[in-house]
Image 1 (tube, rainbow, N blue to C red):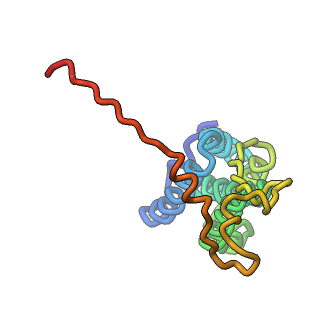
Image 2 (image 1 turned 30 degrees about the vertical axis):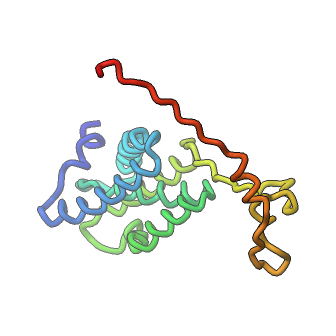
Length: 192
């Protein structure tokens, strides 16, 4: 259990720490900004589940570093954006693929000395969290002309244009400006 909890905080070298710090900071910032209410749950359960899965499938070796959590975050942000089908979240998914898409190769045993088991565990954990964690998707604002039952003939703005799109000056503006009356009420300041 200690290894599952503390392995993301142990790194083999300064270069290993440096290589994990920037992606971890960027992906955590994405997570907190776009999935604020679920971010702590994703980080906590992502660390526990990916660590446990690494412990189950890992070969007898040292599986250290925060790369499992990086894979959790990249996988969650990508798949949640695709599943949510909200244009901003899909755009974020594309940014993650563009910036971190090459990480996918390291979930396979392509290089000695890299815990591909931790990467694969993080990737699968992020996918599972994207499926099961519910988030609030922002409601898209609809303008009047996008709503059903919209009638162009009743639109006050469109009445200022003819069928060719030319502006028409109307007496309607003058009538409404004459109806507006402004009244000022002056009240003395009690201190004067």
